[in-house]
Length: 430
Image (cartoon, rainbow, N blue to C red; front, side):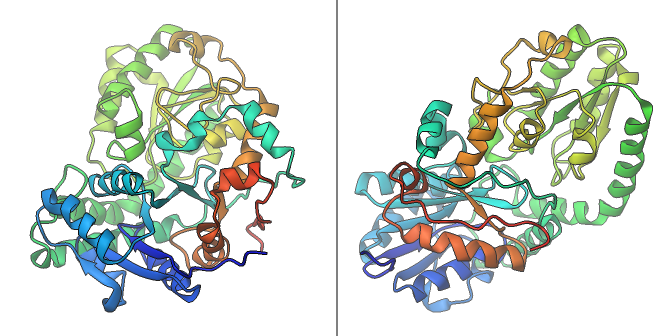
């Protein structure tokens, strides 16, 4: 019998989700016997890693990072690299270095099955996930080794307010401590000051947007018109930038508006639902207005600034997105879904690839049985109960994910081999 232990393991943490989750995880791994270090690239990283003895500041130019990383891997005998998202430049460099050395890369992401799960994979996530190469028949074969039933979907969104709070605090630290890391460059195109201003602006306007959401959602629900729902994403999000065919969100808007004008019934409406963290850096609202007028459908097109998805999705006829994880909520309800980018759930059994005018005219319904098998597979493998941002979510996540990281097999292999650990599935009342 092999006990789970961190002995002889050396973990190097890079950038993580906003807030204290990475520090708490590092502390848990250290309690399991592992050696833990953290590389920080700005004052925000430093603020959320209070253990100064294991913190390594990187203050050199970005082009010096590969050489510095090689030195750190050698100096600390690193066996495992831990990161949040695998596409930002410092992380992509680390993933490549780990592969060349045969190291294990632990990748965290927001849950593929939001709201109350977190994604944990090895080697890559989203378009780089092993899920991209797995078919539904492959998953069904592995599920035959597991007796667990599929749990009900939780109805609580989780910790979006805490997410916004930790994000604003992180960017405040980055801006206030910029002199300590003068060569730091965000992985996005905006400056540190521009990022901080957008976060503060979103927090300030939150009450205004809340009332706008309430009024517009009520008007759509009470109108009685059939409508199609467009799930918008953050233009700067890694899944959109790296795993979609569009260079900007405005390109996607133009394609959707053209397809709606050509294919939708004249009494159907189109509702654009903004991402809950949309901060206005892309001209989404004004572009929707312009395109609707251009195609002569202005009276049938609506924009909702963020908020919860269920109230609209429960009444929608279909949904369209690039590759948003919210597409899973569409499929769970058995609604037709049209995607464009690489997504872990874009399997031919349940995602439409019809030309967009045809989809608006007569959307193909998903194979709900196949999707439920797929969803059960995720819950048995890469989807871990808990969250990054609330205290309760972090506690639940740590109870499960620490052992998963220390296990010799990744979650997908563990299920295939019939050795996946039991995992408690949470409900809001728990």
